[in-house]
Image (tube, rainbow, N blue to C red):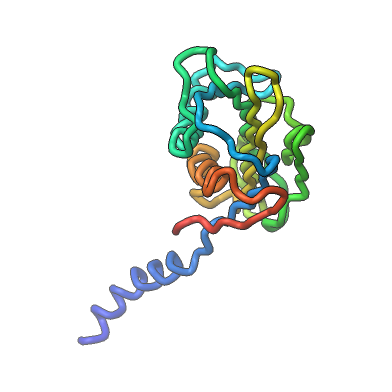
Length: 200
């Protein structure tokens, strides 16, 4: 009968329909700078205080951000003799509820905020099975200082709330998205929070 093939295809069609309706994560990006040109130069990425610059986890995650920095004229240095020092904070936290805007506030001269507080840790990741009502918050903070005098020239953060059971909730999956959003149109508008929708 003609309806039997249609019934066999129905589950596939439904799955495709549901997949097409999934809302891609939105990344909130806030950046601060002094409105002056940031000359191209070399940069070394280091973890925020308490992090381990030699750990495989930090090096692999820093490499993701370094690629995007290189694209905007801040080229990774092979050693510590760089024009800039970039301090990275990468973390994931979890909470019950629905995705909401982050209350984080940052500004030139202060510490970059994060869901867990001020910059001051290394890389932290939520562990354990995801609950149906759980939300994972992925966070990337970056501060760029001149090596010569230690002055801050740019800082920003990218935050993304994702349902914990979504594939995009994994920190390693979210980091490239956070990095590209953070460094898009570098140095970007200062003092504004913009929302960047991720591609499906």
